[in-house]
Image 1 (cartoon, rainbow, N blue to C red):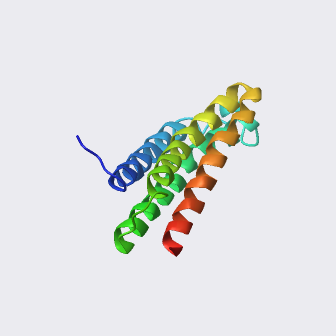
Image 2: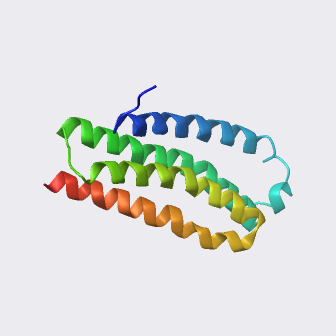
Length: 130
């Protein structure tokens, strides 16, 4: 398969929606237990919920990227790195949520998705302004 920018971001969008639904279903299997993942307010359970919702939120950002590039027929040197950065952020945000839920020192890794998502959104914004 030959995926181009921004189509790969659209594929990532729908993959994120699927993963969000599946992760919600899996988490939902244990929510009836009060002590599930350490209880409702536990850090572990909060990080699992953040991972679940990040699939949907970052799917939305990748959809907005696809929509912006497609509707505005954008091109330029910022788009490939912006696309890659948004994909990296969508992959690493839920990953670091789950890692940090079990290994607290992994929280330092949140810099990876945050910086990549910031770069991807700023680069897209700058491409739109050109």
